Structures are given as C-alpha cells and as structure tokens.
Length: 292
Image (cartoon, rainbow, N blue to C red):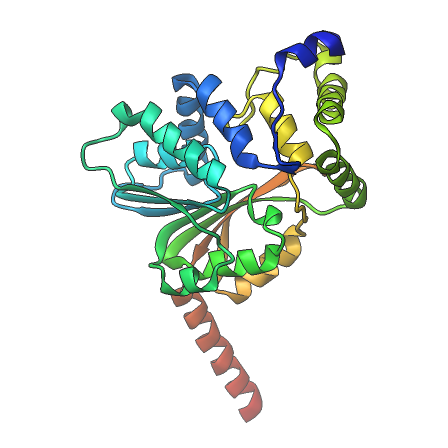
C-alpha cells in the first residue's frame, strides 16, 4: 500500500488542532470493536489475575477510553464498574460500547460512566474505594503523572488491587516527546503522512496487516494514532514506582516489562496487615538491639 492509497482511506483524528484520544476510540468502537476482540481482552485480563474471583468486586477504570476494559470487567462478573475519563469524546466512546454490547450485560449490572479527572482532588477525596483500580496507558498522559498515581493509589481498598500500565522510562524519551509535539502541532495532511510513515516502517513494509489487533484489543492503525497523538507524555521508572508503592503498603503481584515506547504492566495488592506485622517485627528487633 502506497501513501496515496492510504490517505484516501483515513479520516483525520484531530479536533480543533488538538489530539483527542476519544475521537480515536469512537472510530475504533464504531468500526472495529468485535465479539472476538472482547473475548480476547477478557482472556488477557483473566491471565493477569490468574485465579482471582471477580464476583462481587468493584472496579474503577481510570481513563476508560473505548470502554473495552470496563465492559470486560462487567462480563467477568464484577458487581460494580465505574468508568471515568477526562475526554468527553472518550466518555462518548465508552457509552457507545455499552450500547453496542448491552445485550451481553446481565440484568443486574451496575456500570456507571462519568466525565471526570483523576487529578480532581475533590472527586478523589469524596469517592468510595474500590477492590480494583485499573488504569491502562493513561496516567502518563495526564500532565501530572505522579499526582495521578498518588490519587489512584488512594482509591484502592485494603486488600484491593492496583493495576497499571505505564510507559517505561529510557534514553529515547526526548525523541519520542518531540515526535508527539510535532504530530500535535501540524496540520491534518502532515499528520496523515506521519501516520503512514509510522505504519509503513513498523508494519506495512514488513507485510503486517494494520487491521490486526494487539494485546489490549486495539488494531495497529488506531494504536499508531494513539501513540503519535498521545500528549502530554511522561514515562515512569518501574523501580521507583515499586519503591513508592511499597511505602504505601502495596506488594507486587505481577510485573511485565517493556521496551521503550511500550507500557510495562504491574499489579499490586494493598496489604496493610502485612506491613503492620512487618513494622511490629522491626520495632521489636530495634528494641532488642537497643537493649543489647
């Protein structure tokens, strides 16, 4: 496929010169989200959680985007799923997913979709806590990643799970940041060319179908737009995150690394009792040392 043929097939994914994840997601939900993708995503989620019983669990999906993850948590048996996103277009996309696959939801489902920001301290402080706080590829796009991580962490129940996917840090960060700034600053015809060049380099020239899907259920075309347009953009050192979460009484359950430009995936369990007993043991040890 050459650029001229490619350009005829695509519509712009920009709005008033600014990138909107939600417009990308709306396109994805309307034209590409299928039952097979949902089943694959549910299977991937189950693999992360192994033998976890989703029954009667509450979930907060931060940056719900297309609503695919929220839908999957519902179908896995969670009693309540709250989906939030700061982008009104993403809220619309999530609602479209709910409408499109409403027939799959049980009569007692409790799925709430709201226009809300994880950086809103009033919302965070007045909200309930959840058994699962989930945010895939979102917190690094908020413009204040560490505040977003802190707020997300505070919304996890005791013995609850924090499930994050974050761009991994590395020496390529500034080059990737420049690429994203360039994409967002340019006009639609330049954006289309950048999309094609990216897809051609990674997939088209290698004979890979750009409509094939990745692990989170997004095809490579929409994934490319998500990557190029994703700004603000920060990266996270997984070791620093691990230290921070341990200080907040979280223990690591699962970790999968990534190359630069990708998301590392981690699940942590909030376990105050474990750390309470650990602190008691440390205090006793210190007391024995002082007495000796």
